[in-house]
Image (cartoon, rainbow, N blue to C red; front, side, top):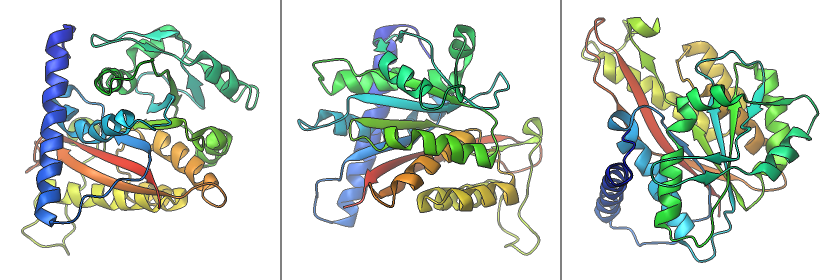
Length: 310
C-alpha cells in the first residue's frame, strides 16, 4: 500500500464508504426495521494487498468504526491474532514493539497486556523478534485499517493494540492457547481482530481440488471453491473448534490463518458456558479472480463480525 498518508487515507475511505453503501442498500432491500446492534467483540479480516482484499476487509472495519463511534463503546484495547508466513513457530508469540507505525497514524502497543500474557503460563508465549514482526504481512495489513477507524471514530485517546502470532500448532495446542487467552478475550474492553485469507487455489499453492464427479457438471472451479469456503465459514460460525478442525482435516483447505482462528474459537468456546455467547456472521466474501481451469489460481477473502448474542 502507499506510504503517503493522504493517498492511503483516501483509499481506505473509499473502501469503507463502499462497504457502508452496500450494507445500507442490502438493509433497505430487506425492508426490516433498523435496530441497534449488540456489542461487537471481534472481527475476521483478510490480509492480502489492499487492491485485492481491501474492499472485503472494509466490511469488517466498517462495523468496527461504528462500534468505536458509540459514546458508550467499552473497547480500550485490540488483540490482533495472525498467522506466521515466514518463520516456523510451534507456539504463539507476542509483539515486542512499543509502537506500530502506519502512514495514517501510529498505534501504541499494549505493554501491560503483553506482560500479563507472558505470565499466564511461563514459557508458553514468546516475544517476536523485530524483524519477524515487521516482515509478517498478515499483521501489517490490519494496522492501517485499525488506525484509520480509530481516527475516524474521533476517539479522544489512543487505543493500544497487541499482535499475537499463532504458529503452526497442533489442535491440542490451539485448545491450550485458547484456554489461556480466554479470560482476556472475555473482557468487555478487549476486541479481537483475526487475520486470515481463505482458500489459496492453484498449482503455485499445491492445492487444486475440483468439483467431484457427482456434482453438477456445470459447476465451475471458482464455484466449488466458494462452496468449500462457505462450509468452513459455517463451521466457524458454529463456534465449535472441533468441527472446524475436522473440516480442515477433511478438505485440507488452505486457510492460512486457521491456527489463529482456532486459537480464538477455543477461547470463545471456553467463555461460552458462564460468560458470553457470540453470534458470528460473515458479511462479505470475494475471490481475487474466478478460477476456470487448472492453469488459473485464486485466493479467497472473507470478512466476519462477532457480536454478543442478545
